[in-house]
Length: 315
Image (spheres, rainbow, N blue to C red):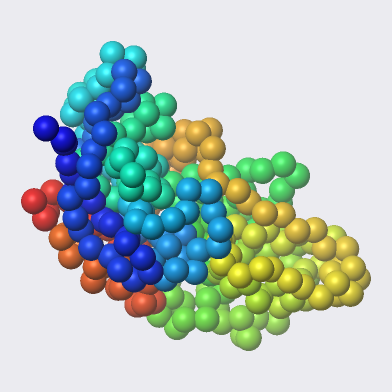
Protein backbone atom coordinates (compact mmCIF):
# COMPACT_ATOMS: atom_id res chain seq x y z
CA UNK A 1 0.00 0.00 0.00
CA UNK A 2 1.38 3.41 -0.92
CA UNK A 3 1.95 5.91 1.89
CA UNK A 4 0.49 9.39 1.56
CA UNK A 5 0.61 12.69 3.39
CA UNK A 6 -1.25 15.97 3.24
CA UNK A 7 0.67 18.87 1.73
CA UNK A 8 0.21 22.31 0.30
CA UNK A 9 0.06 21.76 -3.45
CA UNK A 10 0.53 24.41 -6.11
CA UNK A 11 -0.86 23.08 -9.39
CA UNK A 12 -0.15 26.40 -11.10
CA UNK A 13 -0.13 30.12 -10.36
CA UNK A 14 -2.69 30.89 -7.62
CA UNK A 15 -4.02 27.32 -7.87
CA UNK A 16 -3.29 26.26 -4.30
CA UNK A 17 -4.93 23.66 -2.10
CA UNK A 18 -4.12 21.10 0.59
CA UNK A 19 -4.22 17.62 -0.91
CA UNK A 20 -3.04 14.09 -0.34
CA UNK A 21 0.26 13.41 -2.10
CA UNK A 22 2.49 10.31 -2.21
CA UNK A 23 5.25 10.04 0.37
CA UNK A 24 8.33 8.02 -0.48
CA UNK A 25 9.74 5.58 2.11
CA UNK A 26 12.82 6.75 4.02
CA UNK A 27 16.35 5.67 3.08
CA UNK A 28 18.81 4.60 5.81
CA UNK A 29 20.19 8.17 6.09
CA UNK A 30 16.78 9.83 6.21
CA UNK A 31 14.24 10.74 8.87
CA UNK A 32 10.46 10.92 8.86
CA UNK A 33 9.23 14.14 10.46
CA UNK A 34 5.75 15.06 11.63
CA UNK A 35 5.51 18.78 10.94
CA UNK A 36 3.91 21.06 13.51
CA UNK A 37 4.41 24.44 11.87
CA UNK A 38 5.46 25.66 8.43
CA UNK A 39 6.10 29.30 7.60
CA UNK A 40 5.11 31.02 4.36
CA UNK A 41 7.91 32.93 2.63
CA UNK A 42 6.90 36.29 1.20
CA UNK A 43 9.88 36.16 -1.17
CA UNK A 44 10.33 32.95 -3.12
CA UNK A 45 6.95 31.42 -2.24
CA UNK A 46 5.14 34.57 -3.35
CA UNK A 47 6.80 34.22 -6.76
CA UNK A 48 5.87 30.54 -7.01
CA UNK A 49 2.28 31.37 -6.04
CA UNK A 50 1.94 34.29 -8.44
CA UNK A 51 3.71 32.57 -11.34
CA UNK A 52 6.45 35.23 -11.44
CA UNK A 53 9.32 32.98 -10.38
CA UNK A 54 12.10 33.17 -12.98
CA UNK A 55 13.66 29.99 -14.33
CA UNK A 56 15.00 28.20 -11.28
CA UNK A 57 16.47 24.71 -10.71
CA UNK A 58 13.63 22.33 -9.92
CA UNK A 59 10.96 24.77 -11.05
CA UNK A 60 7.69 23.44 -12.41
CA UNK A 61 4.17 22.53 -11.36
CA UNK A 62 2.69 20.76 -9.51
CA UNK A 63 4.92 21.46 -6.54
CA UNK A 64 5.00 21.49 -2.76
CA UNK A 65 6.46 24.78 -1.47
CA UNK A 66 7.93 25.66 1.91
CA UNK A 67 11.36 25.79 3.55
CA UNK A 68 10.51 27.02 7.06
CA UNK A 69 9.15 23.94 8.84
CA UNK A 70 9.59 22.52 12.33
CA UNK A 71 8.44 19.22 13.72
CA UNK A 72 9.31 15.99 15.50
CA UNK A 73 11.24 13.01 14.18
CA UNK A 74 8.97 9.96 14.31
CA UNK A 75 11.17 7.51 12.41
CA UNK A 76 14.90 7.45 11.73
CA UNK A 77 17.00 5.29 9.44
CA UNK A 78 19.94 3.31 10.77
CA UNK A 79 22.42 5.85 9.34
CA UNK A 80 20.44 8.97 10.21
CA UNK A 81 22.23 10.01 13.38
CA UNK A 82 18.97 11.23 14.94
CA UNK A 83 16.44 9.46 17.11
CA UNK A 84 12.65 9.59 17.22
CA UNK A 85 11.49 12.38 19.49
CA UNK A 86 14.06 14.91 18.30
CA UNK A 87 12.64 18.34 17.45
CA UNK A 88 14.08 19.63 14.20
CA UNK A 89 14.00 22.53 11.78
CA UNK A 90 13.41 21.31 8.20
CA UNK A 91 14.51 23.60 5.33
CA UNK A 92 12.58 21.58 2.76
CA UNK A 93 12.19 18.10 1.34
CA UNK A 94 11.82 16.33 -1.99
CA UNK A 95 9.91 13.20 -1.13
CA UNK A 96 6.66 13.34 -3.08
CA UNK A 97 7.25 11.12 -6.08
CA UNK A 98 6.59 12.94 -9.35
CA UNK A 99 5.44 16.08 -7.51
CA UNK A 100 8.26 18.58 -7.28
CA UNK A 101 9.53 19.52 -3.83
CA UNK A 102 10.30 23.22 -4.31
CA UNK A 103 11.02 23.56 -1.53
CA UNK A 104 8.82 20.84 -0.12
CA UNK A 105 8.47 21.67 3.56
CA UNK A 106 4.75 22.52 3.70
CA UNK A 107 3.38 19.07 4.55
CA UNK A 108 1.91 17.26 7.52
CA UNK A 109 4.59 14.55 7.30
CA UNK A 110 7.73 14.46 5.19
CA UNK A 111 10.95 12.55 4.61
CA UNK A 112 14.29 14.36 4.59
CA UNK A 113 18.00 13.57 4.73
CA UNK A 114 19.20 13.77 8.31
CA UNK A 115 22.07 16.08 7.33
CA UNK A 116 19.50 18.58 6.01
CA UNK A 117 17.57 18.98 9.23
CA UNK A 118 18.80 20.78 12.35
CA UNK A 119 17.91 19.96 15.96
CA UNK A 120 16.17 22.82 17.74
CA UNK A 121 15.05 23.52 21.28
CA UNK A 122 11.40 22.42 21.50
CA UNK A 123 10.82 25.42 23.77
CA UNK A 124 11.13 27.71 20.75
CA UNK A 125 7.77 26.48 19.53
CA UNK A 126 6.43 28.31 16.49
CA UNK A 127 9.36 30.79 16.50
CA UNK A 128 11.64 28.00 15.25
CA UNK A 129 10.10 28.49 11.79
CA UNK A 130 12.14 31.71 11.59
CA UNK A 131 15.48 29.88 11.66
CA UNK A 132 15.98 30.05 7.89
CA UNK A 133 15.29 33.79 7.75
CA UNK A 134 17.58 34.43 10.70
CA UNK A 135 20.31 32.35 9.05
CA UNK A 136 19.81 34.21 5.76
CA UNK A 137 20.13 37.55 7.55
CA UNK A 138 23.27 36.35 9.31
CA UNK A 139 24.74 35.12 6.02
CA UNK A 140 24.23 38.54 4.45
CA UNK A 141 26.13 40.14 7.32
CA UNK A 142 28.90 37.57 7.67
CA UNK A 143 30.22 37.30 4.11
CA UNK A 144 33.72 38.26 3.00
CA UNK A 145 34.78 41.92 3.13
CA UNK A 146 31.43 43.12 4.42
CA UNK A 147 30.36 46.11 6.44
CA UNK A 148 27.38 46.20 8.75
CA UNK A 149 24.43 48.04 7.21
CA UNK A 150 23.87 51.74 7.79
CA UNK A 151 20.61 51.53 5.84
CA UNK A 152 18.23 48.56 5.48
CA UNK A 153 15.51 48.78 2.83
CA UNK A 154 12.40 46.88 3.88
CA UNK A 155 10.97 46.43 7.39
CA UNK A 156 9.52 42.96 7.03
CA UNK A 157 10.85 39.99 8.99
CA UNK A 158 14.15 39.90 7.09
CA UNK A 159 14.75 43.62 7.58
CA UNK A 160 13.97 43.39 11.30
CA UNK A 161 16.29 40.43 11.74
CA UNK A 162 19.08 42.27 9.91
CA UNK A 163 18.60 45.27 12.21
CA UNK A 164 18.63 43.10 15.36
CA UNK A 165 21.73 41.21 14.25
CA UNK A 166 23.50 44.47 13.34
CA UNK A 167 22.98 45.85 16.84
CA UNK A 168 23.90 42.47 18.36
CA UNK A 169 27.18 42.55 16.39
CA UNK A 170 28.07 45.91 17.94
CA UNK A 171 27.05 48.07 14.99
CA UNK A 172 25.32 51.42 15.26
CA UNK A 173 21.54 51.20 15.04
CA UNK A 174 20.78 51.30 11.29
CA UNK A 175 18.20 53.38 9.50
CA UNK A 176 15.38 51.29 8.01
CA UNK A 177 13.14 52.33 5.13
CA UNK A 178 9.65 51.09 4.41
CA UNK A 179 7.02 52.61 2.14
CA UNK A 180 4.12 51.10 4.09
CA UNK A 181 2.96 53.11 7.15
CA UNK A 182 1.86 49.99 9.03
CA UNK A 183 5.42 48.65 8.93
CA UNK A 184 6.83 51.95 10.20
CA UNK A 185 4.48 52.08 13.19
CA UNK A 186 5.82 51.13 16.61
CA UNK A 187 8.89 51.74 18.76
CA UNK A 188 12.24 50.26 17.72
CA UNK A 189 15.87 50.74 18.81
CA UNK A 190 16.58 52.16 15.34
CA UNK A 191 15.00 54.70 12.96
CA UNK A 192 12.20 53.51 10.67
CA UNK A 193 10.99 56.02 8.11
CA UNK A 194 9.68 56.51 4.61
CA UNK A 195 12.40 56.82 1.94
CA UNK A 196 11.43 60.37 1.01
CA UNK A 197 11.75 61.44 4.66
CA UNK A 198 15.43 60.48 4.74
CA UNK A 199 17.93 63.16 3.71
CA UNK A 200 21.12 61.10 4.18
CA UNK A 201 23.07 60.46 0.96
CA UNK A 202 26.35 59.03 2.17
CA UNK A 203 25.56 55.57 3.49
CA UNK A 204 28.52 53.21 3.60
CA UNK A 205 26.53 49.97 3.33
CA UNK A 206 22.96 49.61 2.14
CA UNK A 207 21.20 46.23 2.44
CA UNK A 208 18.13 45.86 0.25
CA UNK A 209 15.54 43.22 1.14
CA UNK A 210 12.65 44.84 -0.73
CA UNK A 211 12.81 42.58 -3.80
CA UNK A 212 12.17 45.70 -5.93
CA UNK A 213 14.14 45.29 -9.17
CA UNK A 214 13.70 49.00 -10.00
CA UNK A 215 15.31 50.37 -6.84
CA UNK A 216 19.02 50.18 -7.68
CA UNK A 217 19.39 53.72 -9.04
CA UNK A 218 17.70 55.14 -5.95
CA UNK A 219 19.99 53.23 -3.62
CA UNK A 220 23.20 53.90 -5.54
CA UNK A 221 22.43 57.60 -5.24
CA UNK A 222 22.40 57.19 -1.44
CA UNK A 223 25.86 55.59 -1.22
CA UNK A 224 29.03 57.41 -0.33
CA UNK A 225 32.06 56.97 -2.57
CA UNK A 226 33.20 53.35 -2.39
CA UNK A 227 30.04 52.28 -0.60
CA UNK A 228 28.50 48.82 -0.91
CA UNK A 229 25.01 47.83 -2.00
CA UNK A 230 24.01 44.35 -0.80
CA UNK A 231 21.12 42.59 -2.54
CA UNK A 232 19.70 40.38 0.18
CA UNK A 233 16.20 39.97 -1.25
CA UNK A 234 14.94 37.87 -4.14
CA UNK A 235 14.18 39.57 -7.45
CA UNK A 236 11.84 38.27 -10.14
CA UNK A 237 12.72 40.86 -12.78
CA UNK A 238 16.17 41.58 -14.29
CA UNK A 239 18.17 44.14 -12.35
CA UNK A 240 19.49 47.20 -14.17
CA UNK A 241 21.10 50.48 -13.12
CA UNK A 242 22.52 53.57 -14.76
CA UNK A 243 26.28 53.23 -15.01
CA UNK A 244 27.48 56.88 -14.65
CA UNK A 245 26.25 57.42 -11.03
CA UNK A 246 27.64 54.04 -9.98
CA UNK A 247 30.92 54.91 -11.75
CA UNK A 248 31.17 58.25 -9.94
CA UNK A 249 30.51 56.59 -6.58
CA UNK A 250 32.82 53.63 -7.32
CA UNK A 251 29.94 51.61 -5.92
CA UNK A 252 30.36 47.97 -4.97
CA UNK A 253 27.52 45.51 -5.56
CA UNK A 254 27.20 42.22 -3.67
CA UNK A 255 24.57 39.50 -3.90
CA UNK A 256 23.93 37.64 -0.64
CA UNK A 257 23.15 33.99 -1.33
CA UNK A 258 21.17 31.57 0.79
CA UNK A 259 22.32 30.59 4.24
CA UNK A 260 24.86 27.86 4.98
CA UNK A 261 24.79 25.25 7.77
CA UNK A 262 27.30 27.40 9.67
CA UNK A 263 24.87 30.33 9.57
CA UNK A 264 22.05 28.15 10.89
CA UNK A 265 24.24 26.88 13.72
CA UNK A 266 25.35 30.41 14.60
CA UNK A 267 21.83 31.83 14.84
CA UNK A 268 20.60 28.76 16.73
CA UNK A 269 23.22 29.42 19.41
CA UNK A 270 22.32 33.13 19.53
CA UNK A 271 18.62 32.33 19.87
CA UNK A 272 19.07 29.62 22.50
CA UNK A 273 21.38 31.90 24.51
CA UNK A 274 18.70 34.59 24.50
CA UNK A 275 20.88 37.04 22.57
CA UNK A 276 18.78 37.14 19.39
CA UNK A 277 15.09 37.76 19.97
CA UNK A 278 12.45 36.48 17.56
CA UNK A 279 9.63 38.24 19.39
CA UNK A 280 6.97 40.02 17.40
CA UNK A 281 7.94 38.65 14.00
CA UNK A 282 5.19 36.06 13.56
CA UNK A 283 1.98 38.04 13.29
CA UNK A 284 -0.47 35.52 11.82
CA UNK A 285 -1.23 31.81 12.25
CA UNK A 286 -3.80 29.63 10.51
CA UNK A 287 -4.74 25.95 10.41
CA UNK A 288 -3.05 24.24 7.47
CA UNK A 289 -6.50 23.33 6.18
CA UNK A 290 -6.98 27.06 5.50
CA UNK A 291 -3.76 27.37 3.50
CA UNK A 292 -5.44 28.85 0.41
CA UNK A 293 -6.69 31.92 2.29
CA UNK A 294 -3.57 32.06 4.48
CA UNK A 295 -1.34 32.47 1.43
CA UNK A 296 -3.48 35.37 0.20
CA UNK A 297 -3.20 37.04 3.61
CA UNK A 298 0.57 36.47 3.70
CA UNK A 299 1.12 38.10 0.32
CA UNK A 300 -1.57 40.77 0.11
CA UNK A 301 -1.86 42.24 3.61
CA UNK A 302 1.17 44.37 4.56
CA UNK A 303 0.41 44.09 8.28
CA UNK A 304 1.16 40.36 7.96
CA UNK A 305 4.89 40.06 8.61
CA UNK A 306 4.92 36.27 8.82
CA UNK A 307 2.13 33.73 8.37
CA UNK A 308 2.59 30.26 9.84
CA UNK A 309 0.49 27.19 9.07
CA UNK A 310 -0.39 24.96 12.03
CA UNK A 311 -0.52 21.33 10.91
CA UNK A 312 -1.56 19.87 14.26
CA UNK A 313 -4.25 22.49 14.68
CA UNK A 314 -5.91 21.31 11.46
CA UNK A 315 -5.79 17.59 12.17
